[in-house]
Length: 150
View 1 (cartoon, rainbow, N blue to C red):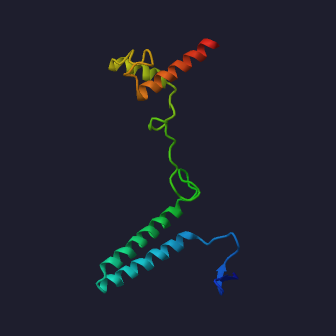
View 2 (cartoon, rainbow, N blue to C red; view 1 turned 45 degrees about the vertical axis):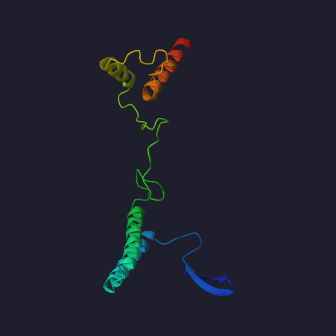
View 3 (tube, rainbow, N blue to C red; view 1 turned 120 degrees about the vertical axis):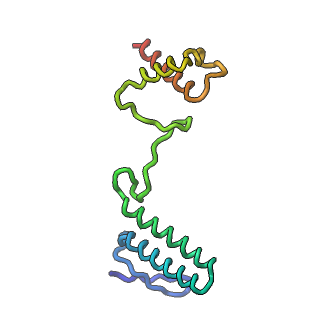
């Protein structure tokens, strides 16, 4: 280990690091912090200071969740900091899901026919044509235009 001296407001402090740019395993750091804060919370509660006890427990809870998050770093479905990777959302707020069988257009058309909403977006400027129906109509229109130009 290497000690680095750092001047802060005229005073000199010593900070111990492994190597510049390298950190220790933060999972154990967060676990130790959670244990320490939980212990402090118990002492504060024994003294009758509920407010301070709650503050310590909040910090302990955060440290505990951070320790759990550190375990998930780099695993599938999680980013480099251990947070879950969010699915991309469409502008309308719906989650984009890839077609598993390639039959999404046929299923959408069948659903329109089944619900009796055929012609709802013909023309697209119709007042009732909003939201997902409008997006689907625009998609169909673009696909038709591509087919026509081929």
